Image (cartoon, rainbow, N blue to C red; front, side, top):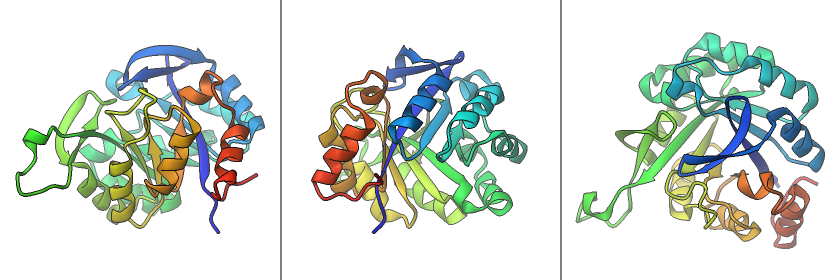
Amino acid sequence: MLTKRIIPCLDVTDGRVVKGTSFTELRDAGDPVELAAFYYKEGADELVFLDIGATPEGRNIMVDVVERVSEQVFIPLTVGGGLRSIDDMRRMLKAGADKITINTAAVLNPELISEGAKRFGSQCIVVAIDARREAQALQEKTDDVPKWEVLTHGGREPTGIDAIQWAKEAVELGAGELLLTSWDADGHQTGYDLELTRITSEAVTVPVIASGGAGNLEHLCQALVSGKADAVLAASIFHYRTYSIRQAKDYLAERGIAVRR
């Protein structure tokens, strides 16, 4: 049986880990290298490291931080933010990342997904999708299924692209995994968008990481069971020590969910 993964997320800007609400109102959460080492010792299955200021600011990701993290962390490390080319991907993988994640660059140049998969293997290519639920008034009257729009540039730019269709296309192009974040739920700690997560998970053939909205351990359980996610990403509940990785895994195991001990 495949185990479900618990993945702390480190959003970094100006050299510090931060956490916000719907991608705004950022609060400091600590040093990225120290936090990464802490989560590794706690038993995290993987880490996701996102330089959230790189794309909006038009700069490259901080290679030095990735190098320092990879020296202390010996679990899979996914790195994203500001990656725009195959050379950028190669640089991150050489710096110590096991996977790279692309969002805005993938939307602007979908061929980057297929080229990255060809060069490094699909298992290295994680396509991140920031999705915002469309208002009911914008949806077709004959369609009861909700719709979500893809956002780029750190959640700042609407694209008009349907998130579920984009998820399918990304997988067809070669993405080996999807990092799915609900813009509406992010940072509110009221639970993941289970509908978004479930519909996406059922639509694709690769693992889906649920992101955005974790406020307690039951939310993690819901995303894995009702949302059919393969992994859960969380930030606030771990950064501010509301729960530990061990507590999360114990909780899930008690409910019959296979986790790596």
